[in-house]
Image (cartoon, rainbow, N blue to C red):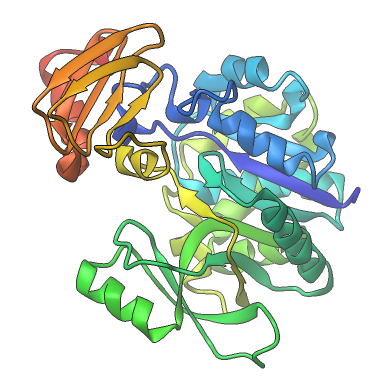
Length: 359
């Protein structure tokens, strides 16, 4: 247990959830479902059942330090890894892994985003424990693959090799980013593909060796900071090197290149809550398939909508079908649910034409 660690990545902006999610308070710090816990807090709660609280690290942008410590009073400042610039997941993970490795050369680590929905928590916990035991004994990079139940175009896919038919562990063959619908159907029908959950398990020395092989320049920067980790000079050192790190994901940097990537096939009611549509899918609906979050609503001749206003507000809506109606702070968004990918365009246009106060 003492060798188990967790890194929760919580640095995203969550622009696809605008206007609820803003630069000042992104989606990982919000309570969408009215449970009293934000996405980050729910993720922390899950992993604290597997990993000692003192071994859980939160990697995020330096802008969110106070928010993290406010929402997770159980952790210390030393457990918050602050990125001075956004450089995607590979530099973030390289930082976390090198810091953990200086503390414990035998560390086994689960790396996870902060905004996933897990419906079957007991299955999730047993799967993570199984994965940590596997990487304790094997120098392989392990990803968690989710058995698909529909031709989803919003997720990445991992093709797996055949195994002995008894194990849930497979060797990874190929990685494919979000496919079109036709390809997603082929993936589903073949039985050879799993959804890429974005969660990884490995022992510290294995992933650091992979960084040495496939992203040496970035690896060397964080290795050179070993003497500063856990000291008052840590942040100063990170600030001095971070801007010059390559902006690249762990998938592109390492997983798609390494030959020791394996997959643990899982099924624990997982969803990547990346869009309004995914929130809609997992929320309670009325008889006309409308979802109301936070607020109260009176809906007339309405169908398949998601209505999200601040707590205490009332939405009275007539005649809408397949729409998102979301209000937060100074912004009201009304757009077709089926065209929610345009929200990023709306955010960019707002920044250019109206100003950053609204994003």
